[in-house]
Amino acid sequence: MPWYMEKNMEKIIKPRGTMDVMAPDVFAWNYIEKKVRDVADRFGFTEIKVPTFEEIGLFRRGVGETTDVVQKEMYTFTDKEGTVYALRPEGTASVARAIIENGKATDTLPLKYYYVINCFRYEKPEAGRSREFVQFGTEMFGAPSAGADFTIISLGDTVIRELGITGIKLHINSIGCPNCRPAYRAALKDYLKSHSDELCDTCLDRIETNPLRALDCKNDSCKKVAENAPRTIDHLCPECRAHMDELEGYLKACGIDYVVDPHIVRGLDYYTRTVFEFIAEGIGSQSTVCGGGRYDGLMEELGGPKMAGIGFGMGITRIILAMKQCGIEVPRLAVPKLYIASMGANASAKAMEIVSELRNAGIGADCDIMGRSLKAQMKYADKIAAEYVLMLGDSEIEAGTATIKEMATSEQTTLKLDEIIDFIKGK
Ligand code: ATP
Ligand code: MG
Image (tube, rainbow, N blue to C red; front, side):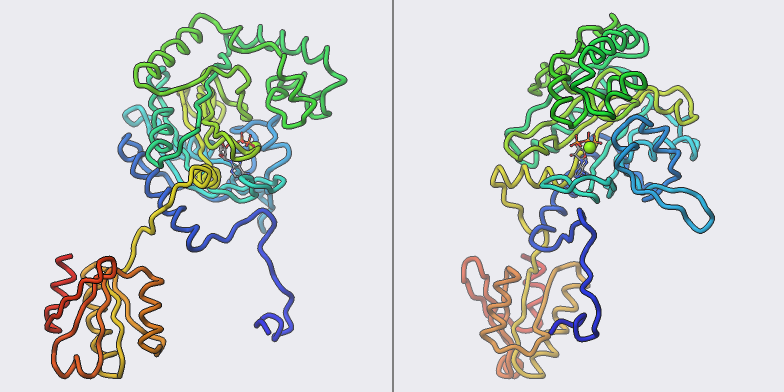
């Protein structure tokens, strides 16, 4: 009988839409996290850690009142002092706030930050969509050039490429700027009004407040209306057109394959000009593994200086799904170099001593602490994928020598007990 029933406790299960991650899946998580940190470092980004919860107003202003995230998906709570907080649904608003609050806006530009954070959204859970998920995010502030857009896109592309994922396509679009948007908005409003009987209630409201959001609605009928809607890309001012052309030039020159996709608009309010998504074929409906874009209005919106910004968010679970789809095997990051199988108290004590010394020298090592039979210990060594196995019994202790076996080759070497540590260190 499980312990919780013995104690007459109710069975407690994890909240809907959350995950327990353990071996072997956790190897993939750690492998991906290591890769994204490595690539971000190479691009000159430094890590930023921000709070898990923020005042709700930050997301209202920074993400936008008319977005699905703010209107439907935030986890909010009131603390004992009566302040209303939200578990962060994304990272960008917090990074911008942190830059303003810590006086970083006057540092040498551009500011380049990355993070690996858990985010929370009240959504309908399905494959690749959960209520708590982990996002690798990048943010670059203070660089309005198309070269900055290229750098961010290239960072995402490098991660995907170096993880070995194939079948992911970069989709880019431009949604214009405050100069070209009014004319576009007017055209879009007229179009949406003429299709008002096909729109959901939220989008009907959005016609007046933020018509662009209607193009990002998940409702099937709204999606159909969006398909033939006027396109931002056809309404760009000369500056926005030139910015897009320059970005396309960099992508071509550096061999990053892309398509211009007028339907990419992104769900967040503060985007301007470039928006992009990396979309995987064949991982189901949640196929956007990475989404991002430019948000030149955000910093000011949050009370900071006027400062350009661009970044992306990459969902780690969706990356894992794409890796599985490609049949990519993830290596276990650290396997023990040595496992010592021992029989008898003296041998066991010696095993502890050797293992301890190796661990102190930074080498992974393990030995029996379960009192298992020799056969069971060998099976265990196999399970933990130890590279070498050493057998220690009373006779080995007496003789002062023991045999070490390299598991991959079955090659055996007999060594003096005091040579073992140097032998393993040399491997
Ligand atoms: P979607 O259209 O799939 O809802 P989104 O536009 O809401 O995505 P963003 O806010 O741009 O997504 O987040 C960036 C990335 O974070 C997404 O491309 C995706 O990989 C990941 N992501 C977003 N929401 C979730 C979720 N609920 N569960 C898992 N991953 C998510
Ligand atoms: Mg979403």
